[in-house]
Image 1 (cartoon, rainbow, N blue to C red):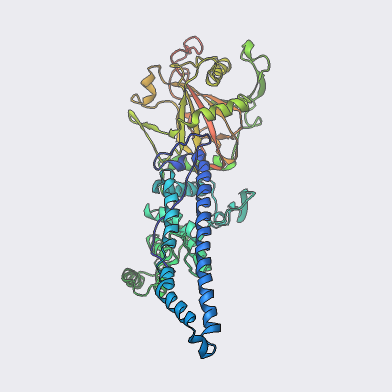
Image 2: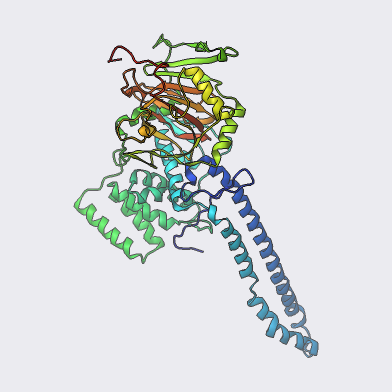
Length: 546
């Protein structure tokens, strides 16, 4: 059986409590919480499919029973003595079967009713199913991980996370269970890249798709959205666009073996042959595939290197001013016990506070945030908007003095000596990252007078206090680009840094990024503390250059 290209995608989700919260259109991929919630609905769909299979088996058993009954009559009765045919009972049952029983079997609506029941069950979950943007976002997430961590596509297809170091494949992460990708999986990733005219990625993923489809003899499966012909078609044109005309011709000729009357492919073959006559063919070289340009092309290499090292910190040998200690900030509330402080950098000044938050507090914060999670936004002029360079969902939490949020605000104030209360500190922002979730290089402080940061009318963001609410198995570090170091995710720890110099100017060395999460469910909470309200806590310097 072979079908033309169609799309049918089933990511669903559920909310962990008794309240069902439907995911906003096209945003499931931006939060791993939503992806986890999809498991429950797929379980429901599995149950519905099992019911369908059981009903169909029962229906087919009835048909098989009828077939056996009729076959036995023809094998035993109708091949016997002529006297058996003269038996009026035999004649009657023959006429009855031909008049009504065969009609009932052939015209039965039971198969259609079973199919309709399955479709109805599927449609009940439709509000929570992913949209095209989710599929595209998930595919882009895989390609982002591929790029940032230099992962090899053939390894990803085998369920391994490997990059080549000095010509040898090295495991970046070794999963306990390997998830193998099919030819159709690879086709869909490659097609997303293809439709963006990103032939660097489309070639790599479609090559794997064609290889896997060939391995199955080109057989089409019911759940597949693509076929070998689809993959060959897209791969041939991708190679043509990268300048590899000879291979594009070879793939198109292979495609014609499967679809010899395809007029468009015939025209392409003619076009490629003419090009090869007028221009000598060239094989695909390392220069043939180039990564798409990036808004952060200037810092991309440093950013990716810091992400790949997953926590490349400065050392005491390079900077003897770094140290660890038990810190109280002169506050009696921190005496028992004092906080373990690790100074990671002096310029910019970045500190890691270990065990800042308890497991119970972290879970409370995540639970409070779940209902309010929305797609994270970035400053866009005077407004805020979603962006491809920030893939996550976030929620803002207010808190009374007795609440978990209020207690964290108080603890932050004791540690930093700053006024963290609203409006001098923004409400606590809780963030859950999505598939390949990341935040490309950015400043926390406003770099434009029209920034939404100034809407509080309490000045710029003086400092950042970021709390790691969860651990991850791989990836997700915070990379300081110009300072050239990164901070790994340390569960229950908090990172603090100054965004502004003493003179109120932004510190460019605080350019930082949230590296893509390779494996794990990353949750953080951000507290941004503003300039106003800190006049006596963080005094200005007499030196205007400081």
